[in-house]
Image (cartoon, helix red, strand yellow):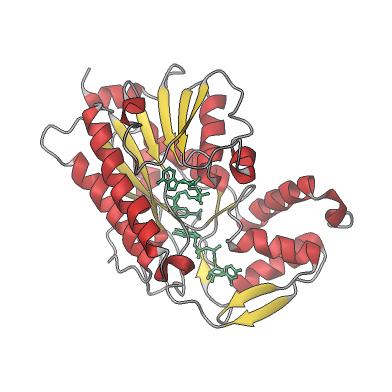
Length: 335
Ligand code: NAD
Ligand code: UGA
């Protein structure tokens, strides 16, 4: 079967075999749960083990224990895991060291190795195993400073942070592999825009704002608080990722909700939802923090049939509900 046809069959068919790198992460855990719910066999790879890492355990709570899920505790930088890709219909390569602000210092070695070298290894392994479809997590941080209008995929890519540089390299590398002569593999690089929802990484804004409101501990606000983000709800991101897995189109695709909201506005939404003030503490603007992000996701709509459905108010309400399900006493009097 030609690779495109095989990829197209994948995910439409409940017997597909999917590999998720970074499965124990925030987005990877949600994606794994959805793939399993849709009947796929899922093989999750991560260097965090659910038995020894509480966050990994929480993120993989729905996957672990299911017979169609297997977990492989591997560091992608240490060879030996590659045969796991044999027979896969689709690889979702989400493993990376994420986060814009810490990427300047000594940690950059980790960013470079986990985001660039590991991607090269995943792509070589995918091509070798003749995996028809790879979906790679890229980032809005590839764009850098914009003029405030929605970014389309052909806008200039001038990352402002070392992290953004590694994500641009991630997607360029993956797409270069798709373009190799006789490559059996098509690649979609999804430029996710600031993802939030249950299980969000603890370094990120929205979870921190909700915690600050509920616990009364101050939120550090970097810069003026007027920087804007196209905050995108996790379920929409998972929908887009699955839709990209079903397609065979190669290229970079924005995955963003399509509305830019400032940090200050997020605080106001949190205050409204919780009925409590968000105490803040000012801090200088963080190097590498883009003044604004906003996605034009027309391409993902036209090619994958995807569009975001959850607006910020509804998404933050769901995020808060999840937070309260874990910390009931703090939430006793929330709206
Ligand atoms: P996360 O940190 O929660 O998940 C990443 C996972 O990758 C972690 O579990 C980590 O252990 C694993 N990993 C890292 N290096 C590895 C290695 N060498 N070998 C094996 N496993 C390794 O991050 P996330 O927020 O879920 O992000 C997932 C992906 O999406 C990343 O590629 C990130 O750059 C991208 N992204 C995230 C956002 C966002 O807002 N969360 C936005 C844009 C892009
Ligand atoms: C997020 C992810 O962390 C990156 O991994 C991802 O690649 C990126 O989205 C993306 O869209 O590509 P970021 O936009 O910085 O990065 O998301 P948050 O950490 O939620 O921060 C949003 C804004 O809130 C930033 O301007 C940040 O400076 C601000 N912020 C964040 C604070 O003021 N205080 C905090 O405690 C956290």
